[in-house]
Amino acid sequence: MFRRCAVFLAVALCLAAPCLASSPARAGNGGAAEGAVIGGLTGAILGGALIGTGTGVLLGGAIGASAGAVIGRNRGPQGYYYVRRGNCHYRYPNGRVVRVSYDYCY
Image (cartoon, rainbow, N blue to C red; front, side, top):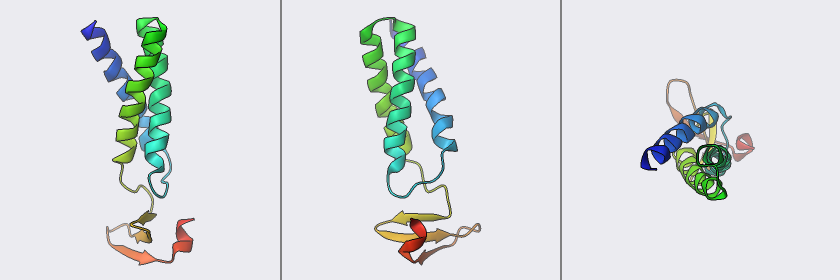
């Protein structure tokens, strides 16, 4: 039972991580909500397939949603324009960050 759950968790995380990394940048914590949805769906599908019961679907969805939310929340800004502490910032390719008008972040 423990081996089955460990394999399920590893596969769910591996399937959720590329989806989160390839998504476009969003202002704020949109990544956490997106990660929870993707992780929950992936976890529910794998939980149902591996365990084969409704409990597996429920358990897989809960584990996948929480893991996806943590992964999505911990992502840094992927694009050049992003919001931090209520201000819009622009990140140059060399790493320098400057504050810009809030209109650029919409």
